[in-house]
Length: 145
Ligand code: DQA
Image (spheres, helix red, strand yellow):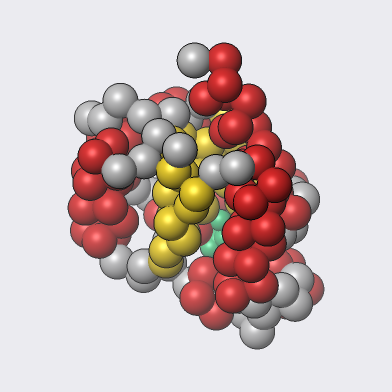
């Protein structure tokens, strides 16, 4: 069983980007953490990142042919992208919304998520370990199905 771990804009800069908000962990560290957790759960993962909305949409469209679920940190597109919401609504795969920071404790504009209505659930506020939590939740979800 394969899971797509998809990361949106600016997450390539993790580690140096506002470390007081997002921590010192780099995206490469996050990928390693995901791989370790996936091995433990006996899942395979594809880990990717794009700064481009259309590339993320294409990845969501292509996912059902290869993957059983998606873990999505859409970055700031979470708060703006009806197109990402529509892409998720167009496929029949469970999506878990993920954020490093607690978006509900931050600026008002981050409280709104276009992903939440089409996601199974949301994990936020646990930093990089949220990715491991999301993989574990996805494994449980797929085992129930
Ligand atoms: C984020 C939260 C978003 O509000 C922000 O725009 C990001 C990262 C997070 O992981 O905490 O780019 O998705």
